[in-house]
Length: 259
Image 1: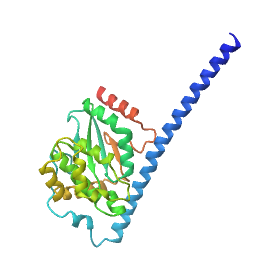
Image 2 (image 1 turned 90 degrees about the vertical axis):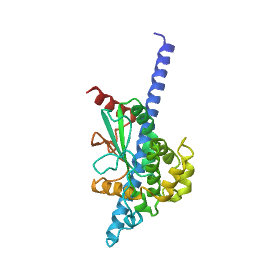
Image 3 (image 1 turned 90 degrees about the horizontal axis):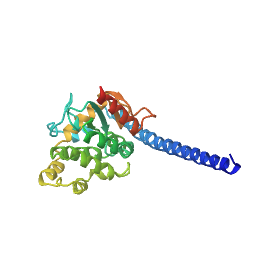
Image 4 (image 1 turned 60 degrees about the horizontal axis):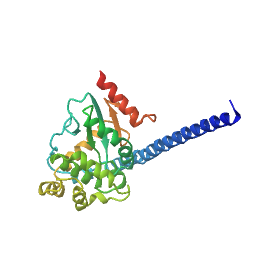
């Protein structure tokens, strides 16, 4: 083999090795982004615990959410706090606890939602969403609660999944309680075909599901979870696995469907 050909092969191998290293670095940055954002929401949980301890004589969240517990249409689970997405007979189940103000939850959705949508639409996976008000407790405000109520109102209209995505796509910075503004939440409904109706508006404005949201957050606390998002696959916490990727999730779902 000529020196020129050997040099060409060597150069090609070097380019391939460089591309592999670049991909590894990109994957590492992606995982760091998600883990880093998770720390913010875990710290939010610590702040919530501190607030509760300092104010054990009363619970502002409960008083703000006084009234009968009105679950959204189709809510499932032991406490009636799960909003289901996907076919009920799917063999694999993903349980997701999220706060619409939580930046780590947005990071999770950005990375995993395309795969989740694909698997739910294929009938291989069903997702049970539980809504949490962690950031309200840590940062103050009621944007977590108001957006969760609005998402429950969207569930009543059969539009939860689409509105859920819109809320995360338009999430304000964590310190900005923009979702407290009910007009803002109604405006965002305009991005989902057929959602902005008088019934949806009344549901958002009246806080119809506020007490249900409080019940969902209480279930989160009783579950002993450390932060949001908490993501369980068939009952096992997979979000804590730093080696988890959308492709690995896809493989797990495919394996479950083979069984």
